[in-house]
Image (cartoon, rainbow, N blue to C red; front, side, top):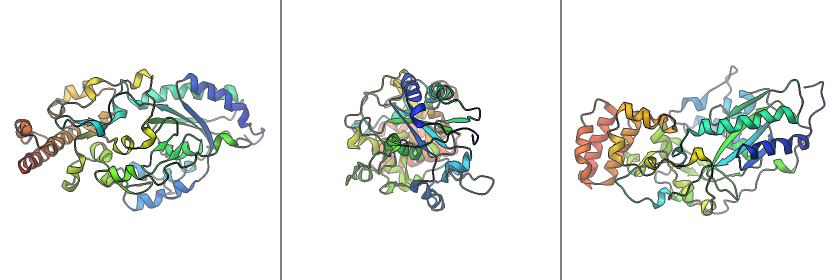
Amino acid sequence: MSTFAKPLLADIWPVVAKAAADAGFELFGIAPIDDTPELEYFPRWIAAGHAGEMKYMGARDDQGRLKRASVLHAAPWARSAVVCAINYNTAQPYSTNAHDSSRGWISRYAWGQQDYHDAVMNRLRQVESAIPNAVHSPDLKTRCYVDTGPIVERVVAKYAGIGWLGKNTCIINQRLGSWLFLGVILTSLDFESFGEPSIPAPDRCGTCTRCIDACPTDALIAPYQLDSNKCISYLTIEKRGEIAEELRGGMGQHVFGCDICQDVCPWNRKAPVTNAPEFQPRKELVNPALEWLAEMSTTEFRAVFRESPVRRAKRSGLRRNAAIAMGNSGKRKFLPVLERLSKDEDEVVREAAVWAIKAIGRA
């Protein structure tokens, strides 16, 4: 683009903003690609082992640099980012108000009719297609991400004005709260200037520490700092094999993900409900019966979660989590199911079931 004048942010802003609104996004912003203080912390986070077994978080480029430590490590051609956010909150109760210990908890974002990766990407492509119409550049290059690439979307979103990074490490918007899916379009457009629209939102967490205090496993080791090894979302989704026994009690009834640090956030008290059809909850996934999950066949697992992010946990992980939740319930009615699971062909499920039987005995 060196032979062409830099595009003006004012030229592209209204066109892409309209495209984002037409695609169903509630929030939109554009940010320059810069190395930020938040990303400077990332190498220390990796070095401390806080990524757990998520080896992809520590992916490096050909020069040995952590890709997620700078957008330019993953996409050296990128000069700006278009960030879109869409609300996925629904009218169902929060996990902190679900007290039936015979049922499990699947994270709010995974209740929908379609995997959010696909749902948001389809909308994001609409916005991407509008960019060439707003800025005519023969050298234009774009790339879309929805939680799928080596970039830290929430940091880019902060500098696009979507919201601030809360103490629970989620992006929070003053009007919509934190129930937000993010989509990022990296572009090669080097704008003349970034003005008011790109100023990051002020941090409005203040002295509040409700998210930190509410975390059952103490995963929020400090404000704005998360140790994935202790996070229920990590344990129930990413962690393979056995889960450390000292963490199982804190998992409660969670079988896929965790919403606690968002459920207790004051900024979510008046969070609006989404109208997006893709995110309307499937009733069977809101507080599902633990027996159903624990004894789900391979065929049923594939059919039920064919277009769901729950697939990420795999059938083995989901059944392991259900067995642990049964143990945490203390309910003797689960003993027949757990006895069967203790003889399961899956070693991980067997071990969790044996632990759960002992846990119910102690209760």
